[in-house]
Length: 309
Image (tube, rainbow, N blue to C red; front, side):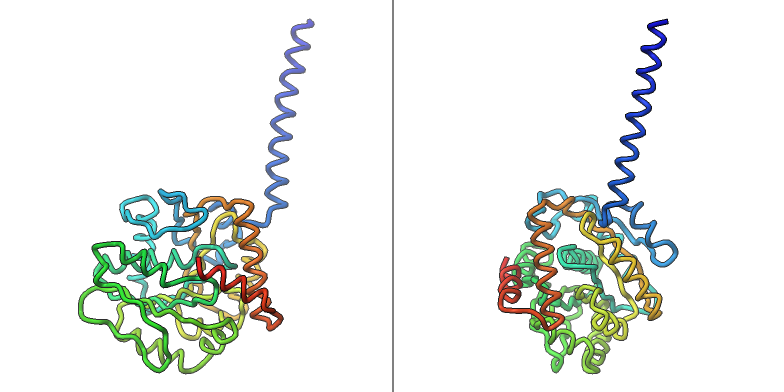
């Protein structure tokens, strides 16, 4: 009898422990605002957005500095190739804007890796970079040209509305037009009729044009790029992307009838460290202040420091 009682207590304890563990998991998920995996993302997207691909962790330790992947046959490289195929054969558009919910989600690396895959498929690709969010395209260009197979076919140019970029020749190539503008100037450029004309000019001579876009949280910039292209792709980094911000963004897309081509779940860098999370929040706050006109010299210094990395 005593043995039966002990066994019963043990079984109840095991069941109670399992129930508490499940409850703790559900509570943590309920309290968390970040998008951590495909399940949490697709649950929010519902029928309003399509998950194009999930980029798995890269082969290098890139929590502090993401790398342009050198091995296209890797799992991450295959994901970029898959995304490139979807975009290259999308009907009725060859101009895409890739954006994110906030700073630090790796949109530039998704854009450039996808562009590299397109070039290797024989395409002439133009990437228009919005350098105002702390991205150093000169450094990225140096990394790209370390790829011997396309080093001679990569070009870095300064963006100019007056002089649209043109391919150097008929061969596959990657051209990066670096847009060196402050957040407010960027908004003026994106919202100008000249920008629409610029995209019309370059889309006629390049096979694909990719805009390494600003964060989509700026309604003005989002509406501007949606007028210039009908291919909007949202890049969300796992453990960084906000559920609340995604829901608000989807509401904006629906309200304004904007064409969301799909969503990329970017897990290339894995879970960010506490220090990286704090840096992302600080940079995001500084950028928001500058975009709203409430920024100070401190915000400018923070963005400048980030872009020099």
